[in-house]
Image 1 (cartoon, rainbow, N blue to C red):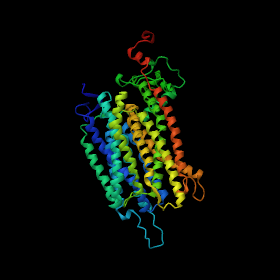
Image 2 (cartoon, rainbow, N blue to C red; image 1 turned 30 degrees about the horizontal axis):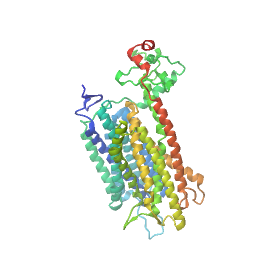
Image 3 (cartoon, helix red, strand yellow; image 1 turned 180 degrees about the vertical axis):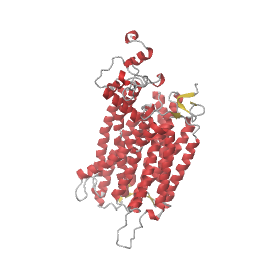
Image 4 (spheres, rainbow, N blue to C red; image 1 turned 30 degrees about the vertical axis):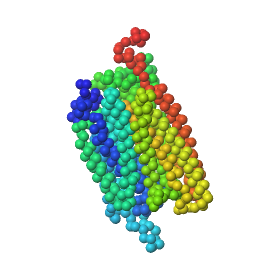
Length: 578
């Protein structure tokens, strides 16, 4: 019995044996799926705008919005994937099904870029007529393939990290430490996939052919699916707890119905039907929700007297699960601005790089390939954190690295400093542009490596904030809502992309003019991108202060083992214990 995991089963439904299931081997098989997902999604996204403009002949603004919408939708659909995994399919089936969906999407994209019937004819430079834009059917096939990939990404990303963490027993100190390392290595492998995408895959797209590159994505995902399925007998499976959204609504409805009823002074009088081992301790926060656990005679169904109506009576544990999700929301809200900064900076930093000197000898660095500095910063940061910081922190504090909230805070600080560095670099670039008096097509006598600090700082910030958010939302959420909480975390990335588009529109409208001037001018050398970066830096700093307040509030409100719980467990009165 000591070798079994209390809340997990094997593929046959029996209690999971620690010696035969879970651990690093199982987690490694799951990581393969995530690497291929990153390879596909990022390999398509970072170079898609050139295909839309150069081959499909779309306007630049339309091309940029298509890419942003694709990325935003990919992360937004993580909420749908999390709901399906928690409610109906479970994480294992969700990963398997949506992996196939993404494989079909990349295969269809490879076909659409290969067949001449699915793209407009090339521009004829000898004729005066304009380039023919892709028709509705051609764009329909392209959108179908892109959003199949987005759907696959949503289902995968909401379940992969949670299913990986399921392979470690939270009640085992050794495996709990391994799970902490898993989150760091999880993001490390994501970065490996991204690095391969922005280097090897982009090169294949430009020099060999897009259909070959997208075909490689499809085949690699198919192989990853086979590897994933090969570990079926080794995985640990957590039982589904039902729809988390329905559970949340049940608590809200029951509490609203009993809003006029006074709470009992003794918490032990509230309804509780969860097993002792899975109960969540009562907390005094959001006490209005506790009314959902007040026992009334009419709460029980007429035909089955022992079964209460879940829309009228909820257990204390169910109420506490809802409270736990509500506590996550302030931290969730204060991390969106990081991804707004991240998404916006990628766009304008590439535009900055296109005007600067990028030659190394006879080789010229593509402006879009500067994303490598992001990925490099992530990999270096994670390596230093794993090999050096964790060991030093363990010797000093006796803990295996920073807490999740500390990592998020470090990421927010680094992004703020990164935007400040970006603003200063743009001041220098604009001064050179003013002296030279060139247009966007003129290469300024200024090295592109001036932009490296902002790439490195924001990339390092991403390494900390991504792993911190992932750890926080999985470990601080109820067991039955872990996949949903992962989707909630990934929705911050989605909102970051969408909010960045909104921010650009607002800034252009407020500071722009009819002749295309303003902070975000049509010609980057005529604008004030430094002011825009400064706005993002100030916004990030204010957001960091709000995050600190939310952190203090969260720690203060974390549920502690209360006297009432002990009273309920022991059946003693308060006077007897005192």
